Image 1 (tube, rainbow, N blue to C red):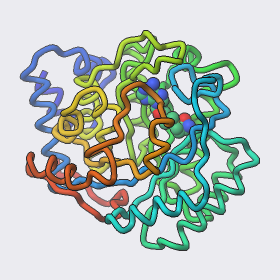
Image 2 (tube, helix red, strand yellow):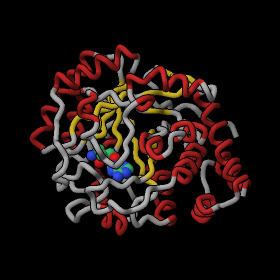
Image 3 (cartoon, rainbow, N blue to C red):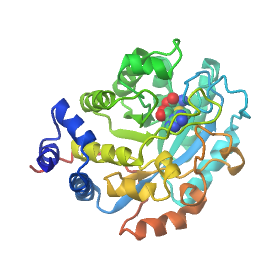
Length: 351
Ligand code: SAM
């Protein structure tokens, strides 16, 4: 089995059945070898620096009703908010002073009429902090809105495809949402020149290992600049409230597989991973991830952005806990890389 790891590292590709074999493998020594190789590849490309992105949770208002998500529109127990322009700019200002050079605006999906406000907001951030990257994670929009957001100054877009299997997609989403539209959005974003991120929840309800292999192969074909993976975590007001939590171990195994497939990709060690295990962030970095996204949102709104139960947004998961994050990274020989951390397509692995 270690040979599969070597092939993946050297050729950045495996046959479907071999991806599945790596996902199923219960030999500890192979899994350790997979993580070591992935961590080595990450160090070879990025050194011991971990990029930070300041996350601003713009709103928990959402027009969609994804069955797994705590801010789905039919959850009437959520106290809804939309940050004001001033609150977003204040969050970015604080982030800039702390040293952040990427802001990520994430949120539920506002109505189409709010697009001009978002576009103006992006323009304002671009004007005030011209040296920063602006990443959006605001879901599905028509092509012309993505185009206007890009023109206003957005550089990157995160849109997890969630699953590449249409039947599975249908189990996670209501009928008015479609996998085809999600994939269409991803290809528009690419055409428009965004650095694009996609990914999945690991252990989402009804997900099989074969589904994950389909996701790996979709990502292999799509070639995103960023890959976002976190464990599924139930939220008590959703239809999947009693579903079990996704595996931290499988999440890390996927970080390693994607690191070997895409040596120069930006792969966050996610908040969801860190929310299910206190060592999650470190486990993710040791498996080859190279980005963390501390929370820059005004503290009084963080509890309301409750995608899942037990979401961490304090200590090293929060922008104000930077010293703690630095200490945590230093304990494993890493440090924060404060640069914008754009994707560098030119880096080539030596065979
Ligand atoms: N609305 C945008 C979208 O769908 O891309 C961005 C916000 S959405 C809340 C961000 C991500 O949160 C989703 O892509 C999903 O993978 C993740 N998420 C939602 N509910 C989750 C849950 N219960 N457990 C883990 N991750 C979850």
